[in-house]
Amino acid sequence: MRVNRNKRTLCATLAAGLLMTATAAAQQQPVGYEDTPKLPGLPWKVHDPNRPVPPVVAPGAAFSDMAAAPADAVVLFDGTDLSKWQKPNGDEPEWKVENGYMEVTSTGSIRTRDEFGDFQLHLEFATPAKVESNSQGRGNSGVMIYGDYEVQILDSYENRSYADGQAGALYGQTPPMVNSSRAPGAWQTYDIIFEAPRWKDGELVKKANVTVLHNGVVIHHKKEYIGRTIHRRVGVYDRPHEPRGWIGLQDHRNPTRFRNVWIRELPGYDSGG
Ligand code: MG
Image 1 (tube, rainbow, N blue to C red):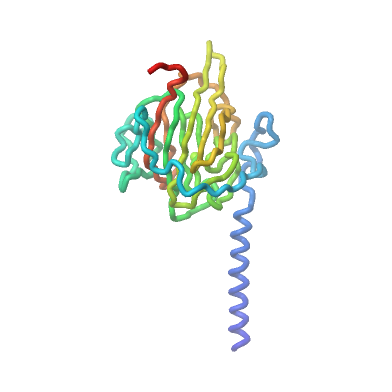
Image 2 (tube, rainbow, N blue to C red):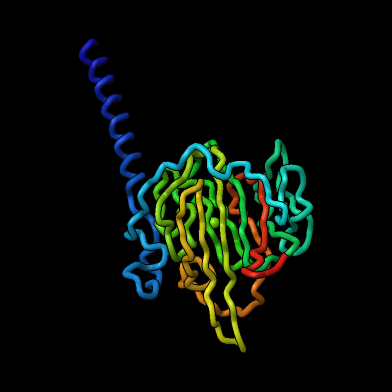
């Protein structure tokens, strides 16, 4: 009997060990797409599983957490209501608002009612504390600038996904320089400085570019978008638009939370007092 019990214990220990090894292996396992086109001027494909993931840089304890809005900012969400937001069809948004945050409810993405030109945007988000699924299924959302240019939101804390799809990525195009994600459930900050693309007589004369600080760490510095964000395809500038537009928050069916969202348009130099 003793032998059997010991055997059982040994088997259970081995099984647990194998499971842990399998979980760790899954964590390291490349994920992505092999049937996508190559990115221009780069050795990688869109969502390439073999593109190196950015190094992890633990952020400081606080940077712009709960940063108060400057006087010339438009407060888009102060924790109390969604009056500055709508569904894409103009209907009232149905995201949950409680305890000073709004939360994705699988009722569709939302967008600002107003439009903004080149801007500085501050927002805070928290991916779900309860970890479910993996890769792109974990805390997926996104900042959809003008609906066309995504700064990805994902739970990228010890969550392997393709590099151009992780938190802070210009989705499908450029991974963040480093991964400065906080743990699931923790509040995180994005400070995004965006310059809109410009067309003249139907010709693109300036690409969109973006600077992003994630929890106070620079992850993009005036990085140009290859084009608008398209899943599994190379981004293109095929929809000339005014150098302004609405800001969207993506509903990817994960209950990601947002708080303290404000934006200020860049006045440009020598704009007078
Ligand atoms: Mg997304």
